[in-house]
Image 1 (cartoon, rainbow, N blue to C red):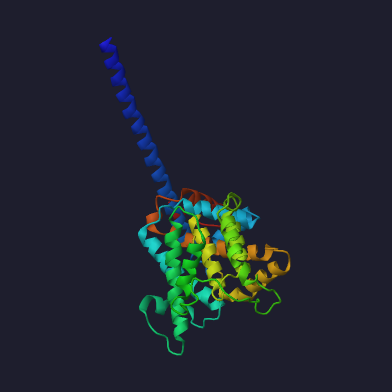
Image 2 (cartoon, helix red, strand yellow):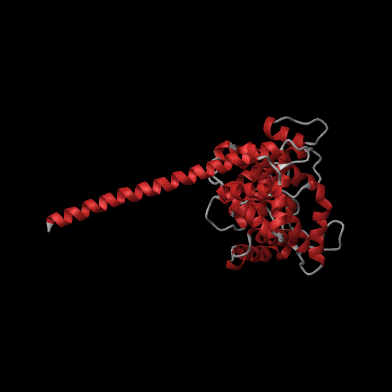
Length: 347
């Protein structure tokens, strides 16, 4: 009996070793396959780059438009590809943060009238340089917005509800260096939307409106929405309440990005170049029974842009060589089917 038990134990150990060997072999094959796909992709890109009109962004966008009709479907495909490259290397994370700290800060402030250019914004943030001919407040707006980005990125990593305290804290970071008396405090007077007849809710209703907003923000109904839809609605509802006397637009865009970052998306930037379309989309919703079609379309476009830009940085990085199998497989097949590349390139 003891001999049989010993044999069974030994057989069990032998099977465990065999199984582990099979798993290791499978993993090695997957890694090799992924590496080969990366190498093939890089070779294809080198060849295609010899064409003047070629760009990796255009290639990715062509794949999306040929295979997915709806923008949300395109976003979901890009997000799936993006997740295939996680965890991101620290160097890539640092590069993305440097890029979006500047870009998000510049565009969000410019929409509100800040006259610092993007390059000047970068100098203020990275070198601490004062730009001649620009006001002190404009410099402080840059610093405050960057601090608010740092805060929402930290908050996004925490598994807790977003409440009024967090909203007031974000607003405080935006304005505390410029207007400390109003930073983080709800307005105490009534205001109207500039350029329209839309009247924001009276100040004495703000406490209840913000309580209701936070309840919705953390509700199961809201959390079940697609992240881009969730962020768009949150942005619109917040800016339509207009709880602060100043800084509501910047605050709404930061809140939207807090929700998107928490869902694993890169920062989404509403560009100053489309300022009029953006303002008109908000006004259209306010004047047409909360019709968010225009605003949602605009946010989808901005999300697509950020996802593609982030992927552009990831897919050519050498640290991605054993990641992103889904992306490399689909894109290399797409290139094989729609582009002419001599077979000798891959020999």
